[in-house]
Image (tube, rainbow, N blue to C red):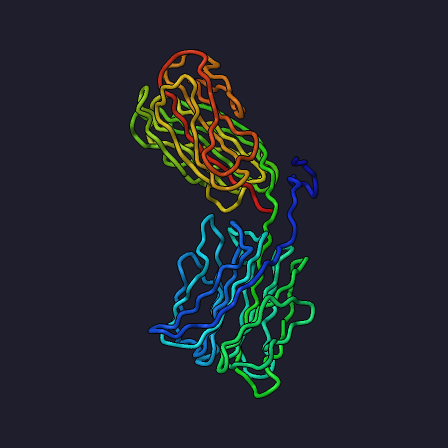
Length: 443
């Protein structure tokens, strides 16, 4: 059960967001064929939605070209001249995965590597910050980085071009846990990975390990902070407004409050197959047109969806401008709080002239807990209140002339095909809809 909590003026949905959990690791050494290959097995406990962090350490430094298997993203590569390199990759575990992954290295070089599974990571943006360092000596030091969010898991990775001795070639930094040591004997390279959870944002401090008790060694090191999956903000309707004009300019006052704000404006222009809306602004700031449709029903009007992320607080004017006055121009606006501030909608779409008496426009939403917002109009409906709302549908502007209306889902939705439902009360003809979904902000 989700419970709304008020804290610092923000609404949070209570859910179990534990620290990142570290699972098993696998390691292997390279196989020298025409091109060097390094095959790493998938950790046995890897499950869909987990993050895999793979380290490929190579003798020879920057001349070595490393080609990753499909689906892996390079997080950082660190070259210690022509001595040794360490390259780190990430991959989100999908529904179907192979049992192993193979990296190709050209020209031939000796390599070693490992994969560790992490669960509870923000797989959309898994890496908070990265730092790299190189050197020569009997101690290798991964640099301090400054984390920006709470509960990062800080991973330190090390590589040296020597085949170090002993069952644990590297020591372990005080306070950290070693994920693995691996070496390609007898000539190297040798690599290690260790981790620690950092509760509060800030400097991680350097992480140092003993490379060798013997001669000095060339080494490369990385510090990678993994972001914990954060809870989502709860989206809420802030305010609505509407208006119409028989001129080339339509001005409507709208009041905005709250945090993580998004303003959505729908425009129904009787511009008869002419796309002549030139701008929509709020307090002089241009909104972004995210969708447009020419309706084939009725008199062939253009419909538009515009949005503005982080609009200014307070009461300001929404202004629509078009090049030529036709008939009435309609504006229906809704502002929401708790929305993603990336500046792009979660998804957009439209439907033209659906003749159904029970109208269920659908949109494939992307983010978890996104809200679906729909402007609609019924061509051929006479009088007011041409629709009633079906299950999961809330009218926020019920009927504003010519059966223009706006409705939303009034709750967060699971990713996938989602719809709102409207039932015709009067008339017949085509149903038009402009659809937009808003993703929640990450707190």
